[in-house]
Length: 311
Image (cartoon, rainbow, N blue to C red; front, side, top):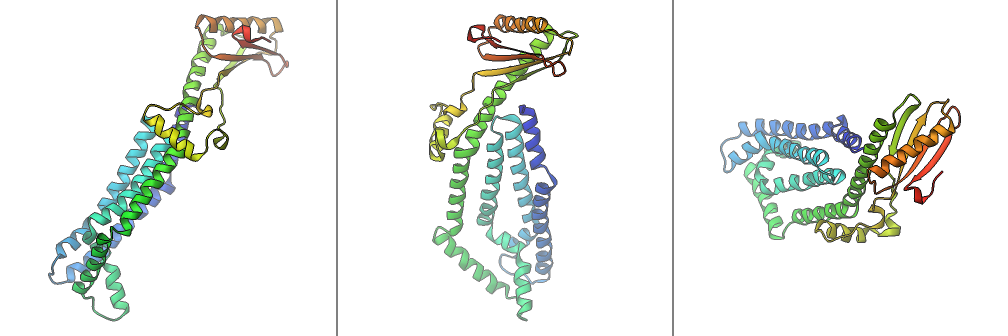
């Protein structure tokens, strides 16, 4: 798979109706919740901190919308402009997991204002009028205890941050490094394929395909998750070597499909032309070359450099 195909696939996924719909539903619920609370607040007489609650009922949904827009921007820029495609997606998700509770920690009364309708509904079910001062005092006491004890919320933020860091360092960053090496190798293959098509193109050639070498990492055999975390940290700091699975394999493959009336001698002449082309380009990689025809079952193989063997 080429990088552009992989990028398009990820972009289509994150912008799919499922993900966009989930974000829209989350923001929409916040908007509706705020509107219900605002109607209740407007019927109440003035009280201390009413302005904060009204502001939250009006505008908290915009903070959530901005958080989702920023997350999508992080993902889109990371996917389309860097080699870290899955890491950018994980970073965007992690940003949401961190920013949403952080907003509630930073603006507690505003978010209380957005959810005031729930307190009003509970009071109505109990058939008691909503005592806004008592409700605010209760929520303030809870908030004070949270801050005094460093808060379960802060522990949550720290836990989420560590979880995101672990996922990125153990999985997405090594995967992106693997894929980046694969994409670079495929680019080399595409350049050689284009050169071959322009050099030996003729009526007998139907198709030329160049394939980058495929690597299939076995995480458990070559490293393990915590060793991958250590390697990722070393790599980010510029002092790490790629584990065995991240080193680009040496053998590329070139497939030249010819017409059914192509003779074996003509196929070998094409093979020699390709080997000369690679030699003239001082191609440093090893290539397995196949000239074949499906109709006539013709199949001629060779290796470059020729000293490695030939078919």
